[in-house]
Structure formats: structure tokens, C-alpha cells
Image (cartoon, rainbow, N blue to C red; front, side):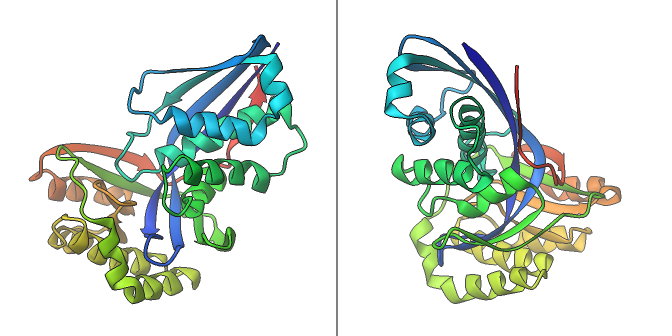
Length: 284
């Protein structure tokens, strides 16, 4: 009998990785908690209030960490508690797979490195088709916090540093969940490459704005809103992930002005601080 609880945070996109398998992200404070409990027996059971959750992703993640032999001898109960809305580009699946991997590793593979734990979730994301690129960029910001600029194909962090702690992300969650055609992002691959190069040189906000204008124009958001958010004090603003949420990163004093830009649209607004918190796990 063992029980472990892991906490992993969400993230917003600075550069979308679909066109070139190179991305950049920034950690936010919205969090996922995964509790893993084992008892004699076999089988995996998942308890979560979120019905749209991919159980295939969770099962695959567990299989990456827990050996076949251990799976034969242990009943594993996973309890998930998430503050991150699913399916809006706020990295809920990366946070969930990392949290599950971290909690399982605490019990079954205590010597696993951060990279091994991270890759379990990334590989599970590809295999369960939750992510096209494995979302290594998302996983890094969820796991380590702060800014992360990554080469997803090589599974490497190219540039990373802490984010300024006085910033917030004002995130708009549209009522309409339509996403545009992701394949079309490749049309602007040279634009995304340029945005990524800026992020690599720590010019994060310009990267985010270029990404925002490019993704909005392709993924059915109104790209005018990106400009309006910048005008009202956002340092950077972009569709997050493949959308449809839009995130604006700003200083606290601009929160009201930024919310006002979103208030003309149908949907909800979430405000979250920038997070530099690394994923953590402890036995319960």
C-alpha cells in the first residue's frame, strides 16, 4: 500500500510548435493534483470530475512508468483534481500526464530523473494521440515553471529562465469551442520560426505577439483583439496552444483594462499569476 500526491501547473503558449516542432511556453499558477494510491490486486481506476479527460493518456502514462510486473500485482487508483479547463490550449493534458507520471514514479521508480518523468508524459501524449508534437514545450513549462523554449523534435530545452513574478495572465475562455484548421499553421512556418528565434534570444513578448497574430488569423480568432490587448497594456498576447483560449500577459495594474477588451466577447475570464514553481510530489 502506498500513496503519493503530485502537483503540476499549467502554461500558456508563446510560440506554437505545430508548424516546426519548436515551441515556447510560460508557466501559470492554475494547477493539477494527481493522487496515486496502490493496493494489492490489479487494474487502473481513474477518479475525476472531468468527463472529457483522456483515460487513454493516463493509462499510457502509467504504463511508461510502472513495469508490467508491478501492474500485474497492484491495483492503482488515480484521483485527479484540476483547475485547468480542458481543451482550450492551456496545457491541461501535459499537466495531467506529468502529474500522473510524477506520482507513479514516487512509488514505483524513485530514482527516475525529471527528464525521464517528463518524457513518460510526452511519449504517452503522442501514443494516445492527445498531441501531435508530444508537446514537449508545454510539458517543460508545466513541470519546471517559468519560460521554456524547446526543440520538441529533439526533446531539448534550448532556453529557459524564471518569469517575472509581478505578472499575471488574463485568459479568455470563449463560449464557442470551435478551433480552426491546425494543418494551416504550416503555411506560416517561416513566421513561427522567426517568432521562435526571438523567444530563443529571450525576446519573449515580441515572439508571443507575432505568434498571436499568426495563430489568430489561422485559427478563427479575430486577430484585431491581439492588437487591442497590446494597446491596453499587455506585454504579449496570443491564442494559447491551438486555442480557442486567448492569453494576455500583463502587470497587475492593467488587469481591468485587459478584461474590458474581452468583455465584448462571449465567454469566461480566468486570471492566473505567472508561475515559476517546479512540479512537486510527496508521499501522503
